[in-house]
Figure 1 (cartoon, helix red, strand yellow):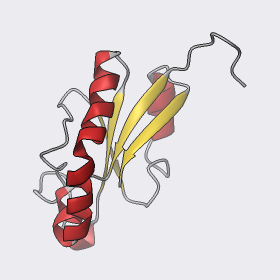
Figure 2 (figure 1 turned 60 degrees about the vertical axis):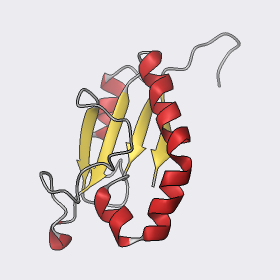
Figure 3 (figure 1 turned 90 degrees about the horizontal axis):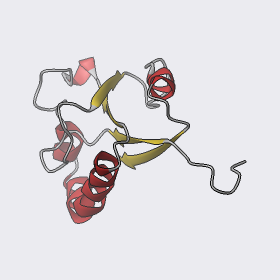
Length: 117
């Protein structure tokens, strides 16, 4: 439990906003486009406050969604940066066998905010 005036040290997780999922489902892409200002607003807040931003992307070898492919890339409208930390996952959970929890702790964070799919 937080005590009054105790500071929280959050990291932002940008989860699965990848070309492949948006290209497969036009309604999902429309939804992201309608909310892109909110997503990018969160990214801007974390960047402005010098808090970590972690981009988590799903790899699906059967579909050919692997690092280096267009489908694997984060949707161009999302304001992530090359300096943001990156995690690749093979399971639905961003925390399952990815090292995400360890990275969050290493970055000195005690909580996370998640945006994405």
